Amino acid sequence: MTSFVVVGAGWRAEMFWRLADGLPGVECLGAVVRSPRDLPVPTFASLDEVRPDFVVTAVSWGPNPEVIRDAVRRGLPVLSETPPAPDLAGLRELWAAVGDSGLVQVAEQYLLVPAHAARLAAVRDQVIGTPTQVQVSSTHQYHAVSLIRGFLGVGHDPVTVRATRTTAPLVNPLTRDGWTDDPEPRPATTVLATLDFGAGRSGLYDFTDNQWHNQLRFRRIVVRGTHGELRDDEVVRLAAPRTVVRTPLVRRQTGYDLDLDGFETDTITLGSQVLFRNPLLGHRYSDEEIAISTQLGQMAAWVRGEGPPPYPLADGLQDHRIALAIGEAADTDRTVVTGPEPWHAG
Image (cartoon, helix red, strand yellow):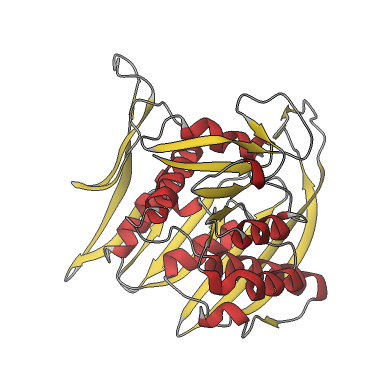
C-alpha cells in the first residue's frame, strides 16, 4: 500500500482524499491542517505527526512553495497543486531550493482528462501527421499552456508571447456557486495570445472570464498538423492520395436509454481505434475525477519505482512561466520572450 497525506482542507484537497478510496493500493492517511477542524479523514498539525510515502500539497498559491520545501527537506516526494509558486521570482526560488532533489511533481491533470487523453493519443499516433499548431479556448493560464505544450510535444525552450486583452458585455448565467439568475450582460475580459515555440510550432490562447462555467461560450480545441487537423471531436486528414476523410471521435457513454450498466464513460474511439479506455469503471466518476485519480495512481507508481514521473516540476514551472508571460504581454501590449530559465536544462 502506498500512502499519502494532503496538506490543506479546501475543495481540491477533499477531492484527493475522497478519490483515494477508489484506487487500489493507494491510501490517504489524512490531512495536515493549521487549525483543528472536523474532516472525514484524520487530521495532523504538521508532517512531524505522520509518515506518508508522499505528500500532496493543496493550499493557496502563497504558502505552497514553503510547504513543498518542508516536505523535500524531510526527503518526501511531493505532488504539488498548480501552480507550484505564484510569481516568476517564486518559481525561480523554488527551483533553486528543490529542483535538484528530483522529488517534486505537479498536479497538472488536464492532459489526463478523457477527452484530451483521447485527442493526445490520436495526435501521438500521427493521425494528423506532425502537430504544428494548437488552439485552446476552454481553460486558463497554466492549464491551457499545458495543453498547448503537450499536444505540440515541446519542451522547455524559450517562447515568444504576444497578447492582447479586450472587454465586452456577456451574460454570466452560471458560476462555481451555481446559477446566478442574472440576465444582464456584465463586462467580461478576453485574453488572446499567440505563442511561438520556433521551428514552425505555435499556440493560440483564447480565454474569457469564467469560461469554465459559462455555458454561453463554447470550449474549443484545435490541433493542426502536417497531414490534417483535429477540431474538438472530429479529425480531417489525408488518408491516401486524393483521399480526404473526416472521422469523429466517439465517446461510448453507458447508462442511456435501456443500458442498465450505470452512467459513466467507457471508451473514446476514432473509427475502430480505441483512443481512451476508462481505467476506473464502476466508480461513476466525472472526467475531472478520472483525471485526478489517474494522476494519483501515477504518482504512487512513481514513488514505488514502478512508473515514470507523472508531471515533473520543470514542466509545471514552464507552464506557469508562459502563463505569466501571457499576462505580462496583455498588460503591456508588447512581446515577451520567456527565457532562458534555470529549469530549462532540467
